Picture 1 (cartoon, rainbow, N blue to C red):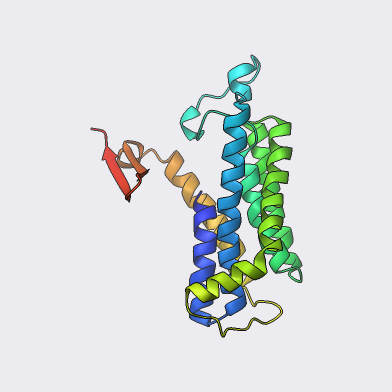
Picture 2: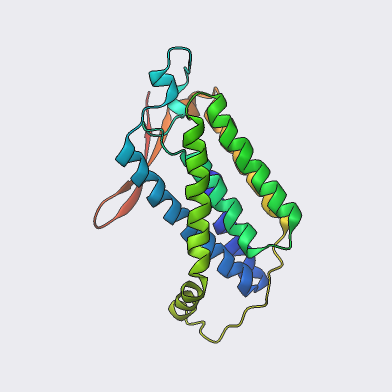
Amino acid sequence: MPVGIGTPIGMYIAARINKNHYDESSAVLLALTEVTNEIFTQSFKYSFQRNRPYRTLNNVKFTDTSSVRGTFSFPSGHASGSFAIATSLTLRYPDKPVLIAGLYAYALTVSLGRIYWGVHYPSDIITGMIVGAGSAALIYSLRKPIIKAKNNFFNQSGRTESSNGEVNTTAILLSVIASDMLNSYFINSKSKVLKQSKINLTHSSSTNYINYTYNF
């Protein structure tokens, strides 16, 4: 989740500062890819309602169930999300092999880790990969009308893009790793403040608000 939220936001801010229109559009396309992927993934989950391996298989043990978001297994949200990010940026930056290799290595590690922990079947992972990559391909195929709509919305209709961006490969890969490590630290921290705190994003028809609770 931190990687999924932080990557497009960080890219967008950096692109605005550097006045790089291509990277700015890439950030918007990435954000739309993630939203599209989440819609497809959650739709499949609630359509199939497949239980996770540690709930159905006797020889699979998993004790820290607090780290599992949601009940259903098919498809893997971690796999679909990580492959959505990797594929979206690959399509936008095909001439950056280090970035591509790094993102897919990260996505593959995340995906295989879900099998290792007993929270997903291999078929969950494979389907998640397809859903994530497919979501990226779908948004990429619609990039021209999306970018045009974005420019019109922000009154930037006169903008022109170069054939490619100058996104900082090292910065993106390091930010992905740092976000994951920071997230892991907070999840595994023994701090009472962190363990007894909970933040929820609540949505209603009229408002969105963040609710913070602390259990004494």
